[in-house]
Image (cartoon, rainbow, N blue to C red; front, side, top):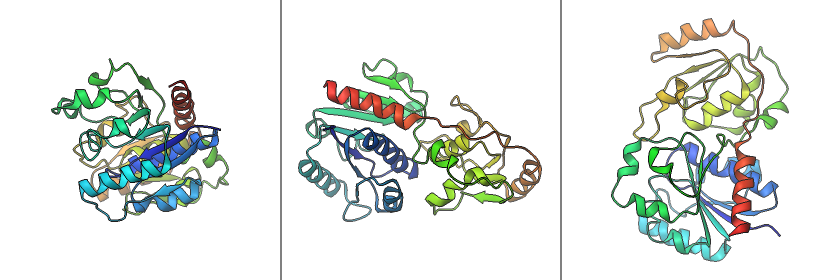
Length: 287
């Protein structure tokens, strides 16, 4: 019997939820029993992935009520390991001082955030609680000396293998992911589109990277997530097909006309979920 892993991804943006679901999906495939605690908007994604998912009873929940709910879920599930994918919230928020008692093994999953957030009061002590840190983008300087740091490729819910099962039809036109509603079928059809329009958030950027399709990126200003840096390839993985960065509707239209004449790069599987799952399961069993 595999270990029991509880994933926490309440709060934050869309990327936290799909990253937690992607890692949980890979762990489940490798034999673990998993449960993901994430906002209710993630239910369609959890259902598609076949991953057990519980949402807070009220959204947005008050911090103390959220803490009590999470602790209740942990007691009921009885995890061997807990995996947090909310930063700096969670680490220095609703789970401050209680994460250590939730499970014998504690893992933090991170992506790039501005280094100043690692300078918040109490952060060093909070990070010491975690036995394992899975960095899915280049780690901040404050994390590089953490004894449990492991760098893995970006973790996505929709994998390159999923994309390869969708029939290719490069004449299907443009896929616009800049709206508020994200759907799994849209991501699955990505490799069959001529061009994708997206902001450059974690989930959509690495889905585009795997699909190898031309893209127009419209990065949004975010206090934590530097979408502009990611869009420029500054986090180590520039898009594999032709892409342009645009800021106005007129620039988007002009870029679409140019990119419609370019070729896709083909599908590639980043493999971050499987690699992260193998590390997580090995460390949890070892602990």
